[in-house]
Image (cartoon, rainbow, N blue to C red):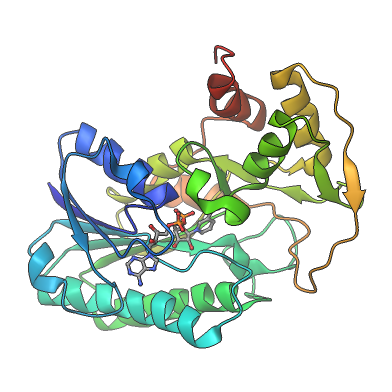
Length: 305
Ligand SMILES: NC(=O)c1ccc[n+]([C@@H]2O[C@H](COP(=O)([O-])OP(=O)(O)OC[C@H]3O[C@@H](n4cnc5c(N)ncnc54)[C@H](O)[C@@H]3O)[C@@H](O)[C@H]2O)c1
């Protein structure tokens, strides 16, 4: 199938684009290279359209496709520029939907986020009220609402929103400060420093390996109806636990260096309910946190997975 992956130079988009191309699909990547990196596409054999997703000049360059995976977005949750965030994330999504209508694309899978739940009750369920506490999370909430309105008007199109939890894994280096906590802590420890975490490292995350996120997107290709579902493991791991696992992988015994949290809008705990994804997409994560970190950081450190 001919497939468009927006944001394909980014962390998740490049993992997905390369995987789809390896499976024999003809993949077109669209990216404006604002936060993504060409390094992520060095082994990608398909076409790359350099364009801003929020504009519409790219429609003809991409042309007819059988499905769209929409990953392009401003992804740094500390960006406070509301105008830019909404223009890229919400209007960019609207352009993708317009493109899908114009070219009669039967299926659009897009990246939403666990950020929409804010500090809402855990485990976070798709049915609970969104509580976004920054402009990034708000933009994802608006995307979900836009999707819900769109499917009412165009019921024949399959529109699947994936609320990714905290994704980690290969090809996230370019994100630097916005990369996963696992990447941040591993970088510090690799350079011999004590891992720095907010007091007292008990915050936890539903970390999910990017391989499983790619798997969820592939499952969404076969989803029978439009839906918005969590992409999570259903298991939480505290920052202290991550440090413990990393110490094991590296063979270190570095103690955490705790400091005060400077952010007013921090999401202390994320934990997803994976039931809807299993029911609607037959998706279930394969890697638990121990195996995920071993295969990611351990492989880079010469430890066989
Ligand atoms: N990584 C996570 O933990 C996580 C969690 C929840 C949701 N998400 C969502 O998943 C998607 C992918 O995130 P990621 O982690 O790969 O981030 P990323 O920053 O690595 O990738 C985003 C890509 O979008 C591109 N982009 C940004 N603005 C664009 C524009 N106007 N036009 C065209 N391309 C543009 C960037 O250059 C980049 O390549 C995003 O929608 C993000 O919000 C990610």
